[in-house]
Length: 217
Image (tube, rainbow, N blue to C red; front, side, top):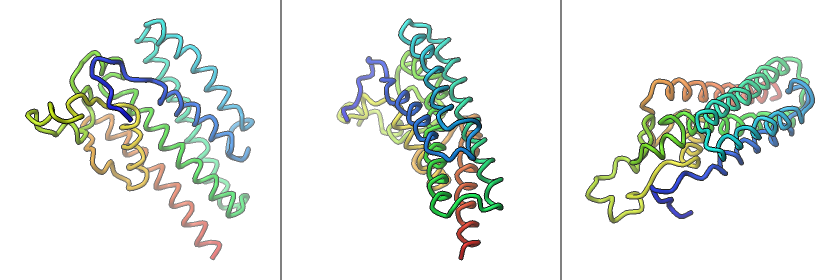
């Protein structure tokens, strides 16, 4: 993937694709793990994305930012509610082992996407604010590219580097997989709180699988 130039705005299609993926993945959950029909969250996401995209294309970036935060809050609540329903259903053994594994994997992937969207949306005031600020843009995470000596940046692709959605997705994946952001230290307090929440959700999902596996054996 080519490195974007610093004078070009960050592409938004990756974050939009992640939002659509959250809706599509949630539709694969059994109905006992969702409030309402399985397609409800997908329909809600489509409805919410329409004004968000419109606000961006018409230059209403403050409105777009507020709508983006609202959208993230909705899918976060959906993730937490599905996890609560999964915890409640576990003692009753309402799901077979294979179905439980599939549901847990679905929630784990959703957890990664949801928190990647939070990091991308909030870091440095959002993608538009990061682009306007210039430089590396990130104010809440210390990406490895930010630690390269200035004298070496001119000869490296990192000299034109700025964080995009994929970078925040990488941080979110590592947090869920290793329960830590690994190579990218978290600087801002809000980011640390979100990082803790993501790690807690991931740990809960893993603990549910282990407890169910121990009960089956």
